[in-house]
Image 1 (cartoon, protein in one colour):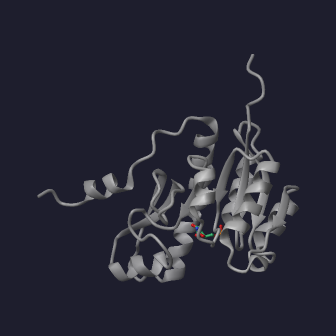
Image 2 (cartoon, rainbow, N blue to C red):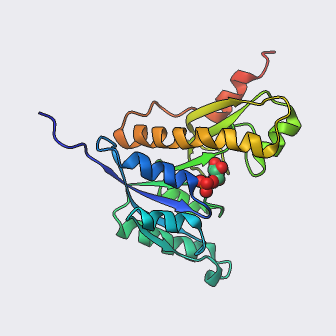
Length: 214
Ligand code: GRF
């Protein structure tokens, strides 16, 4: 007879509304989910994600970056201490809007995931939906990747694609992508926490595979 599933302790970092956090919380309610959300942290005391976590009975704290007056290392040291005190094994960034320094990235190397609203390596950075529309791509989507020092450059764990439809607005495209984010992030976390994730893809190799051969 198999016993209860071993659950990895997961912390989620948010800065805003937290709809991806909501999807992760919902998925972690399944008894067979190998991930348990034990802590939600935010740099923004007004983040909707904090209220969402508390409503779900999950410990949620703001560690406001502003009192640190630009000392990113000190702010990240405070985050790191809280993550460790909670026995965190995996960190999920879910709309965490502060650029991380090598300190936190390296402290959680291989154990920190991010969701990005584009098919990386296309459109790293901000305003991905507007840029996808401006570029005239016919496929767009979202990516879950491991966090490395380069912004949105880490090894890719999972992706979901959506079509760009004629007449799409930025809002319509964003909503189509977000619906996929809410499916993709829980699925990727489940794979990582359960130890069933395939080896991550190298984004540079993925890009090379898309380019025409000489
Ligand atoms: C999402 O689009 C995510 O891909 C990006 O930030 C947004 C966060 O949205 N990293 P939410 O706070 O999860 O609703």
